[in-house]
Image (cartoon, rainbow, N blue to C red; front, side, top):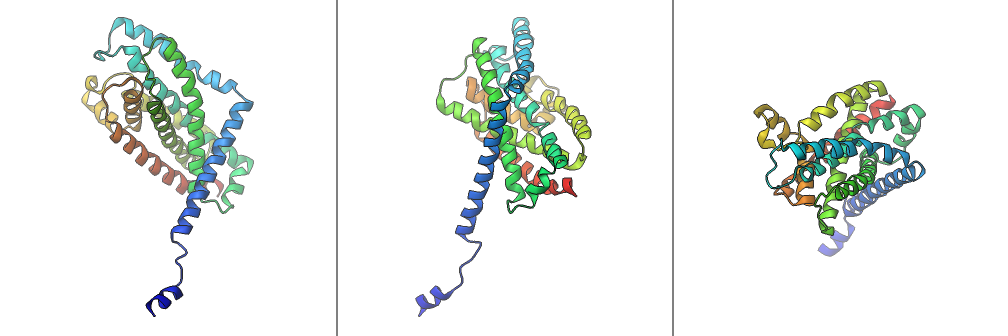
Length: 275
């Protein structure tokens, strides 16, 4: 009788099959957005080249100069080696922080309204766009790492560590692109977004450990560095790329939490753009 009663109980529609379907939908949306981003880069490669100019200048001019004058103490690690992961993180930041402009463009073209009336959850749309920005950043990262190797930076040859670099860059870019989309939901216009993006990009960069160790910062800047996700991204990249002692589990945990929080914030404000 107990077995008969159990067989007559209704199946919970929110159970494992529904959760699996939600995850498949999320992964499908993320994959679709990444494919679209790859197609954009294939049709217009000039953006990759032009965006690589600024990181190249940082490495060639700033890195080479400060390596010679030995103004920044980095222990036994040459300054150029120390700088390269920071410039990699910086280039991903600069790509991601203006990614919200694409959302506003889609709003103006009527594309965003059409996406929001589909059954796809807003979180899936935002996640797809966030990791599509990560794909764009990885294309830039390849150019920066090739230049770093040509300049003599002692990069790892361990493929597992390179896979870790991909994960870290994707997570960091996902957070900063979600931050940009969140600002887009608040600013509502391209001009305001550009102004806010330019106002916060340099403080994020100089308030991190991308250019100099935390140990030589003034106390107030150390506090900013400890709450800046870019610092954790740079720390993880240094650990993976050049083998400096880091806090990899903590760094990745912070980036995962930051990316999840960014996705939730951007999803909550996405509908505001089409009201």
